[in-house]
Image (tube, rainbow, N blue to C red):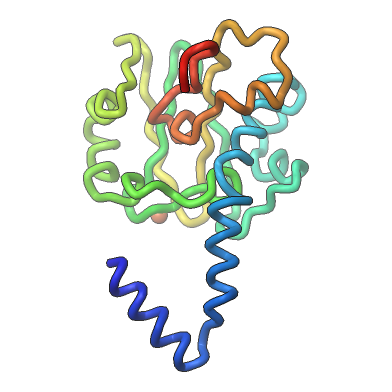
Length: 191
Ligand code: FE
């Protein structure tokens, strides 16, 4: 796939249809500026600011837009909140729809067929592969993304983070915790 993509890019560049420098800057922007740190800021703010959390759960596209993260890839961003009773997990069973503006580029496993099919058939098994185990009475809800609607998981704020600043909180929010295949880093534990 990588070779095919490179071959296609070479041909398109030679024919003058695409500008290689522009492609580089788009990829670089998504790798360095538009990565999961944006989502981590959103989560940290929701943990710290009850009004923002309420706005995020009511209309995530709008709330995230107020922080300057504007979507280029879809119309609706929906934030789903983890609670002790319910764990949320995101997949795109059809392809690889993903909230780029808050999480950056999707990881390879997110685009892979085994994740896409197993996430809906055996979510608990998939979570176990990620080292995530939940109490048996915690419901797991799987959200199937589309080109129009994408999901951001709002993980539970870990204990031991009382009084932390938003910047400190953002440091412990992992990408996978916002997809639902991981947890935030435990305070004090090596990352
Ligand atoms: Fe998709």
